[in-house]
Image 1 (cartoon, rainbow, N blue to C red):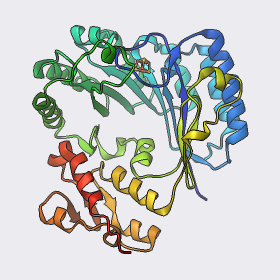
Image 2: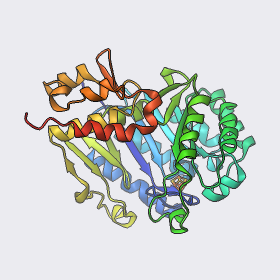
Image 3: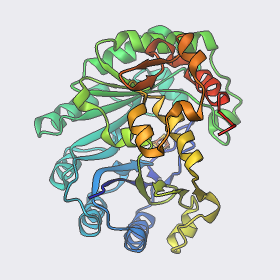
Image 4: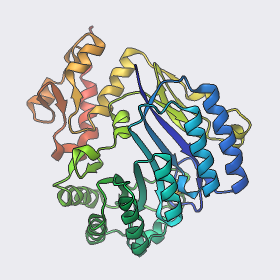
Length: 371
Ligand code: SF4
């Protein structure tokens, strides 16, 4: 039977970071209680009952919920969703509001992967990001996760932050590598509209330094499985199965405020207005994208080319009944070593990932129009 991924959004945070443009609101106990009620209703209304194999609770900050609210959240999940074949269950947490009691509850609820937002451990950088971090607390919480058997732990690291130097990034990496974790997600800072950093007219760091930072991350993690442009697993078995669904252009439900989903031929994003959501109006009709086979192929290309294995050409021709070459002429890209065609897979070489966007643009320009 067909299975599917599932993303649930918890849009509450205790404090707001200066760079954040995610869908979030300040934590408010009553609002969270009302939100969980609505979430239950939304799932009842829109869940099409497919068994879920990867479940990801993201935010916002899911760990900002109190114990009672987390219990309620897990009760909803267990009552309303078919988890009979669930293999990966992730929750996003912030170190500042994660406690031993909450980790125990996660374990009891079946969570087997925790993704912690850290971003940096450097005091000056944390000030710019308007975040907090405490080395002792981080080490204690991660050790505890491992002690009770949640040994699949990710850390998010941000780089290319104003005033950041290669030395600061290297210290961040050294600290992260000293922890008992097996997955690292890295992000270069993006100055999104309406964020505090953008409003304060903060500028991007020099492009050359940005490239050097990416290079430093790749070389520090050279023994790790660099399986996607920004993601590293200590071993292949610790890759994020849920996120791989996104990059493999596979289907997933999206539940909760501002969540995105992909079901059948439809991609959608739920409303980002908390008041609308709390009044039961969670569908955002304007966001619905009906996909033609051509659109699906487009997503297949731009998403799969982010990964180490790239596009599975055999799988592609099975799905679309034609070869990828019949849709796009990428001969020159292969000839010029910008793409590698090997073992029925088409991928971008790891040392060119930094310029992958420009390679993907050139790939799309090779569309065969006289089909
Ligand atoms: S904790 Fe995450 S979601 Fe919340 S404000 Fe910071 S970056 Fe945004």
